[in-house]
Image (tube, rainbow, N blue to C red; front, top):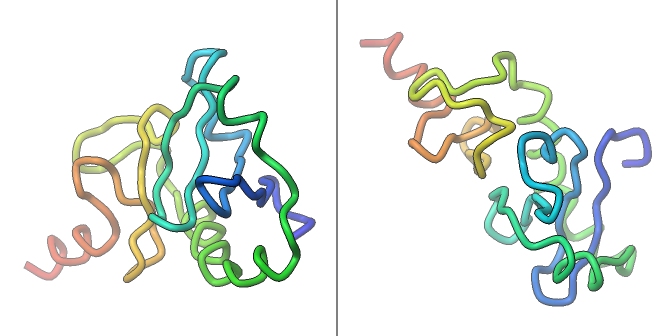
Length: 122
C-alpha cells in the first residue's frame, strides 16, 4: 500500500479510514474528508476534531481492511470521468461511497457503474 497516493490511517472512533489528498479539493480549510472503511463512504469532518485522533494503527487492524482498501483503490482508478454521469456533480465536491458490486464510485444521487450498465442494456 506504500505506492498509493493516499494514506490508510486509524481513528479511535471511526476505525480504519483513508486520507486521500485528491478528495480534499473543494472543501473548506477547516474540513477534512475521509473515506470510512466501515461504511465504504467518504465523509467530511471538522479537521481540528478528527485529525488529533488519526494515527498509523496496528498493522493487523489495517490488514483486516485490505479488501476494502483494494475496492477504494479500484474505484479511484476507475473514475474515468471526474463528475457523476447522473447528476453532473464533481466527485471532488461530494461525499460519495463505493459500490461493492462494481467497485466504482457511487454518487450521493445513487449513480454508479451498475446503473450505467443497466441503462446500456435497456
